[in-house]
Length: 395
Image (tube, rainbow, N blue to C red; front, side, top):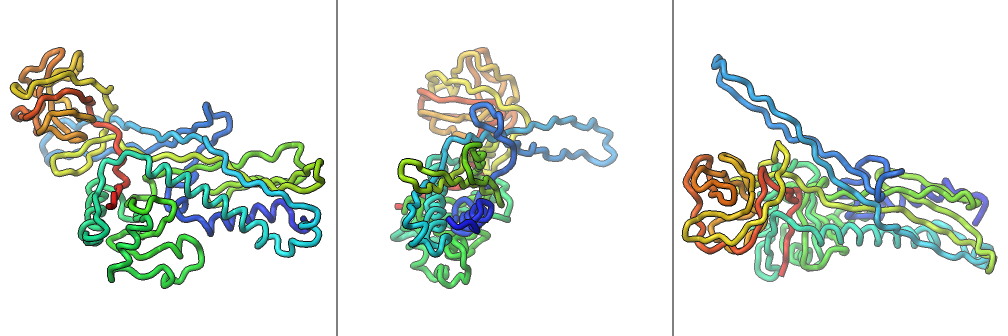
């Protein structure tokens, strides 16, 4: 490697390439902050702002003002993957063959890193459990009415900010979209980087992006804070004669040059530590399907026992609920007439140590469920739900 190709110049160029060539990682909450050094299990906790709605009272009423508390929650991100690419550069290549280090060496290396980062984030997205999933038939459904508008409505009901919304689509869903006159082709976008070239349109507040890393029949409508990707560059080992670690705009990279003494050839090693996660919010859905964030601490998960539909009494040993508690069923087998992740209110009827009933409104009549409950769980004050993103399952 030429003496003019310093470690600083190479890592700076590499980070620029990384930023230019990535698609999915540029659409998410990237390197959201915090320091991994010394963190237990290579994990940091990113703080989510507390949800604090204001209260109201009538003017001149003299009524007592409510005193609330702020409950901050966190997202854990673990650096669990070392993304790397090591290449050998022989004497012959170094002396005779490599005329353009950037084009012949750095570009292929960075494209390999980019593909790995895309795969890591896509795996996080596809493996998550979503509060809302939309079905979409690529052969017959109207993309505007059956995909884009329902996705927008779901995010609106979750109070997701209008800015920074994306719709990342797999190949088959992209094909179905581009088959309509709603969208322009990617080559008409006029950009030069990977994200710009992948954009196939902007509709209903979404920047719609082609993402080959996603399964062909899947798509995800999301706000950028729905997913987090954090990176850190390892330090350069003391024994390495040449190297640099650096971060730029949420990306991090280490480049090290070492000598393989057996073959007397250089090895260019590039790598970064990477961690991903989804961002879940604590809360529940009301009767209109609107997400309501929880202000207080969430209760522990309580296991349901077999409960007969004949009397609408729910059996749960030592549940600990009191009159007026807001509860959410997080899982249900049977219990037709009850809905998971929706808020219900504990009522006085049949409220005992091991039994309770719920109403759809505070102090209302008991919900009539028409089939026996054979299994399930319930929590006080809500549960953690992924509402900043919506999954589209194609067929």
